[in-house]
Amino acid sequence: MAAPITVPVYHYFDLGRLGRGEVVKLFLMDAGIEIKEVRYPYDETWGENSKKLQQQGITRTRKLPALEYQDLILSQHIPILRFFARDLGRYDGETNAEKFLVDAVSDIYIDWRSQWVANLTEKSEKYKNEVAPEYYNLLDQYYRDQAGPYLLGNSVTYVDFAVYQSIDNDERTGTLPSSLPESLIKFREAFEQRPNIAAYLKATRLG
Image 1 (tube, helix red, strand yellow):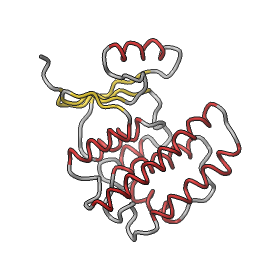
Image 2 (spheres, rainbow, N blue to C red):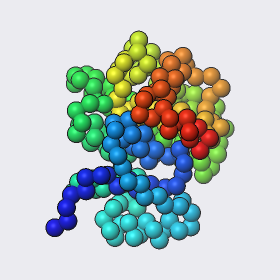
Image 3 (tube, rainbow, N blue to C red):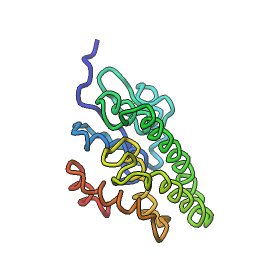
């Protein structure tokens, strides 16, 4: 029987800062968890590579990210975040009400992500002019409830990593609204100063 994998093996596309997988990478970096990265080109070779990964048991859906950790294969980026938040005993709120709030906003993010991906393949003015502004205005209703920069005030949670990634990715695809709510501007500024990820975010600003 193979020994459990102690250093997580992170499988994702070679997309720079774009996509779902980057949410997981940022989270693990912030938590101080070292990973081994395995990257795949997102081109005509992916069809064959995805079949191989499926046969190896790395991904049942032939989608990424996937993470080999201990004796587990973890997939779907938000469930991966939730797994580590529970495993670490942080990044998930303290009370049941806080955990509900974090989960609720993560669902809002998931809905946004599907529309962002759809817009990559079939660009529409509706996404840029309606979907994205409505998404950030909705997030504002949650983030402005707290004095601190994060969803739960001064305590960062797993969903903050997803929300940051949505802002970053919309900016990279030219679909970020010209003005963000003040709560999200403060959030982004604070997030980019987090000690374990600040240097990486600065170095890959144009990546």
